[in-house]
Amino acid sequence: MDRVTLVLASPRGRFFCANVAYMCSTDERAAEHCRPRTPADLLEVIEAVDVRAMSGLSELDLLDALAFATDWARYWQPPDEEDVMFATPATVAALHPVAAAFLDSPLIRWWAEPVDLDNQRMVGHLPSNEEWPESTMPYRSTAVGLDHWRDHVLADEARFRTWRIERPDNAIGGEWWSTPLPSAALVTSRAREGVGALELLLEEDSFGGDEARVWPVSIRRTPRVYEITNPTDWARLVDAYPLAVPESKRSDWFDTTGEYHDWCIPDWVAVADDYDAVHLTLHGYLTTPGLAIPLADNEGATVLAGWNPDATWWLNSEVAHVDDEPALWRRYDDRWVRV
Image (tube, rainbow, N blue to C red; front, side, top):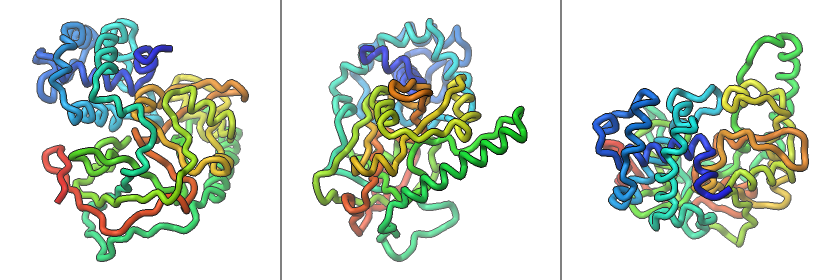
């Protein structure tokens, strides 16, 4: 597939392109915080967009459009009304010029870049009704704990198998993500001008807090990084290091994809033997999450879920080091500002 087709084949890609179209629209149905609510209105608004207006958007505008698409990612439930409308053939056709113009923009050339090893940041959010501890150094385990993660996943799989046998008609949700959680794996994203870390803006099912600490992260040697730039990259990773999870993902991933499969995720213990980290590019995010992606070398399929744009998961604790003295960032009127 070409890049435009890949983006428009993805739920997050379509949602993002619609957000960009609304930003460029002069129609009052897409003004301020308004969004078209019927398929007819949506088509009229998008088809009337002059894509040349995209030249007036800034990098931060495009990141805001991606942030909204990211925050509305849901992999434990069926697609919402907007996702359903964006997936119709007529809407996909209307979004095609928007996607093509976006992909030609010089502002997003870095969206396809690999992990920025010189510019990584870790984000810590302040929970509601709490204050920051006196120490500015976050607690980091010396062990990533991927063995415990795998034990947890296998125990979860056995538990769901028992539940399905006992209650075959019940749809029971579980851990819908395909990241190495729970574990002590470090997660980082890059900083950009005016943005302390992309994670502040680009977070699935976002934390919603208004204050965060952002730590610089030093990479101590040249790491072995696996890059996810499209669905094929994710499928190849799962094919090379498969861990079968058909029971625990059965209900959630049917809801989000509408398909039943013998689901697999990466066995992160095995991945860590060959790679120190795995990075999802922004282009990878626009093309990959939420899809039932078939496997070539194993039975079944996989879903990328719970992975933020530009997030790098560090599977080797000896490679990435969190430096002391974080910067404090606070959100004012939907804008993060360094304090």
